[in-house]
Amino acid sequence: MTDEVDTRQLDELLDDIYHGQERISQADIYRRAVAAELPPTLLSRIAALPQGEYAADEAADLLGGSVA
Image (cartoon, rainbow, N blue to C red; front, side, top):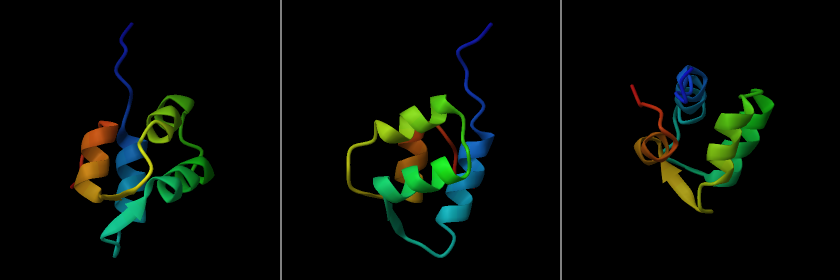
């Protein structure tokens, strides 16, 4: 058993919401993640982000995803 979380859904979400956007708020990221039905582990990571706006690379770094 491993504690690794599959971040493919997170990567796909970030790719989608940052398309044409430079910065997005933590609240908007969380709302979109809930609507996309991301797993609770990923939702808790997003909820733990400090309030504010993030560029795609910042969000990916903080959430453990990757930016293509």
